[in-house]
Image (cartoon, rainbow, N blue to C red; front, top):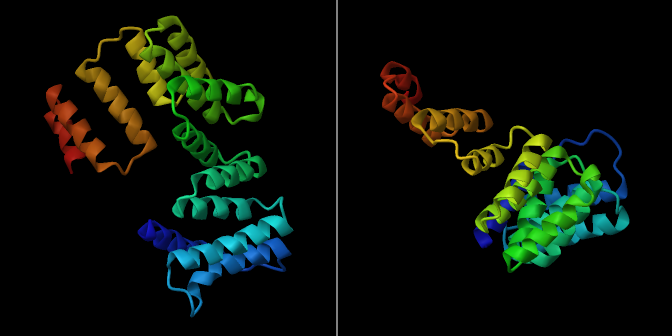
Length: 233
């Protein structure tokens, strides 16, 4: 945990933006928290993380509408192994920054991990979808994909199909949902099929070296050794 705290405080140092003008009190406290790891008394320990957390919490009290105060509280609380408080802070951040898709997805993941049974998780996902109009399409898609997997694991094919299709209707680039739909529909997983999905995943993460090698291997399997050389390079 200490290593993660050190990493997080290091990130705070390098992500603190240059001051562009007068700051509100809340913004000043956030900047002070970000700058604290640079101070002479700081040593990137748990105690320093707690000090930074206190500053971010003060910023949230002084200026509750300031998203950054809640974002940093969540990160620090997760690093300090206080997951309940961290999820609450992350939820507050998401309410203030509704367009931050990554934060939404992180909140779903963390909230899901806190639930004990698959049934509890499915209930939570459905509850989240009741406010679907307020959610980014990627978040709605992720919730439907999770429900599709829930039903698929129980052999409830029709419900799984409906949820997978809903996931793709919301966000067509949800490759996990597309793969699940293909499996539910009995699409044969040929080397060409695997190549299609490997290429799609490279679009999402073009720096994935292992995936590039996998694409080269698939091309070789398909007799396209010359094309494979590019991916091995």
